Image 1 (cartoon, rainbow, N blue to C red):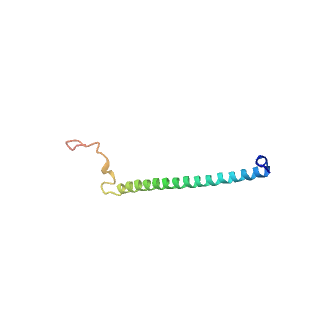
Image 2 (cartoon, rainbow, N blue to C red):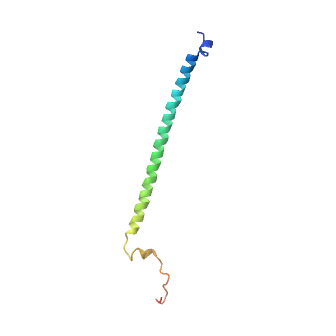
Image 3 (cartoon, rainbow, N blue to C red):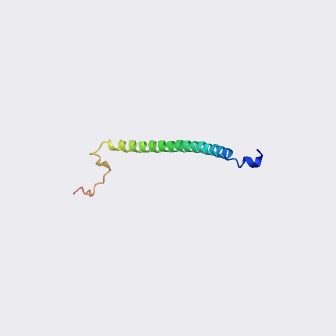
Length: 83
């Protein structure tokens, strides 16, 4: 077979297409694995930040005072102490 007829050979053509498809599939798997690892890392960071925020809120929930009302302002307070 000369080089001109090799390109027209259906068996050779199918083999080359299969090899290309396999290469593409392997590259996609590598890219998906990389994206998945990046996504997992970002999710872990987000989850850690949320846990820190929740822990910070819980610390405020258990402070002493008058039933957690220490942050509320007294709307009825006057300078003379009358209500």
